[in-house]
Length: 165
Image (cartoon, rainbow, N blue to C red):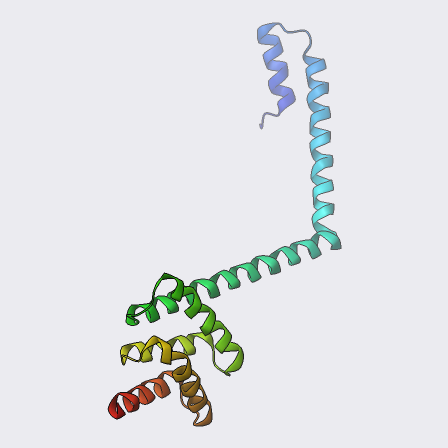
């Protein structure tokens, strides 16, 4: 037979000789009712359209923040690959280069990762930092015109430039 709270209190009262068990029992009963009422209120809140809309909005905002964070991390990773192959760039030049890549993504129909690959190919080929913007613009236009990947166009143009110089 399962023992409930009331039975446990009565046994405790008989063993210890407590007389105010009924008062304690009433107080605990009131607490149980309050807890049940709170649970019903919580269930009603969760079922409400306003709460559901707020939950969906919170999830959407969380997703947007997560995607933006991932894009920023990916950009920094791509830029670190570019900076590995550019020798003549100072501390102020790093921020200028990042800004240049972002601005170029607004002009060329290429993703930022493709533009960073073009800069990486330029750096690997020894193209001077001052000439990289023009090089990247030309490669981006070639890649678009000839339906090539930016990486392929960048490597081909870099080989062509180094062969002609």
